[in-house]
Length: 269
Length: 242
Image: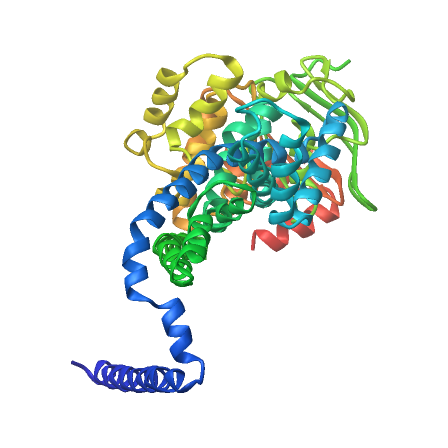
């Protein structure tokens, strides 16, 4: 070990020791202090009941599969509609001007309204038209609400990706005789989509959580199931169970998205 | 109407208030090689971009085989595939392999496979073993040669080269200039904007010195490089040829 390496190793040991001590101090403080709060025994009994946890976990996990299903069929619809809106917003031909306006208004509306409000309005409003089964299903209209909202976000991300591709790429394609359409399809879009994958991963993590909002209009998915248990058992532990299940999915997904973002940034620096 | 392969008359181009081209007249015969020299900002690159109509011109006319290709509203697709251009910054498509870069336009525009011709071109310019690589796996010189192949794959009648060695490390310039020598010997009609004076002198049929958006002086390389008549040409060559 040369002098520099010895110095750096010593620095690392010191940093590790400091980090360990401070982490331990904070954890100890939390563990010792929180139970001293006057309401702690009541909170512990109603939020962290081990028996309730074990009892409700299997059913809640099953209810979570409904969230996963809604998520799974929403994603392709969101990506397709988002791409269509992004392309509509970039349309330059005069005949397509209405499409362009539509794209802009669409994005403004669905980014401007809280997701839960869109879910209420569409989830209760459209079936209220008196549609026959199965077309009055809250699964359908809840999904529609999510798709409308999230495709507006995805469209904006995609558009920023398209605009980030340098004009020289377009010029090179045009000079080879490629049409505007082929230039977009074979040169600009493949690069733009690759560039916005990490940002869209974060969107999908947010979507996974927002699926739970559909509980407000009917589907017995995890959040609603937890609510049912809460009333039944007079205990809040099912909500903690639901949170744990969500974290088990979203934490790895977020980490993966961050990893992609970092790799992308490293590749471009 | 002039009879040359390519003719420019009174070509003007401005970007906002900046007049970049102020009346360019130029005739290029089939098989001729023209070198445009001049300081940065003299209008060389813009002139090339106005020839293939990447930049629409403000005034004047560009004829290709007697067809007025500067006419506003003309469908430029068929024109652009007859005029190849290679840029200083290569502008390869980074998401596809070198071979796919070359095949994209023949497939989409000409509706033909073009693989055999593309492979022959890679072979001819010594890049056969790099065909499947992606642009970022190639050196600058190799990328620029792929860009030349990509333009040639459309079988253009004229090739434009916009300072294609200016972004290269000095030791890589030679391999790209060799490609141009090869094209020259095959009789390709070429217009080069270049800072490689030795190369212009060696190969050009005609050298045009540009300054301030006009062609100040033109003639055979011997004359321009040894006995320039205009003071501005003399001053420019003194500054670059010491």
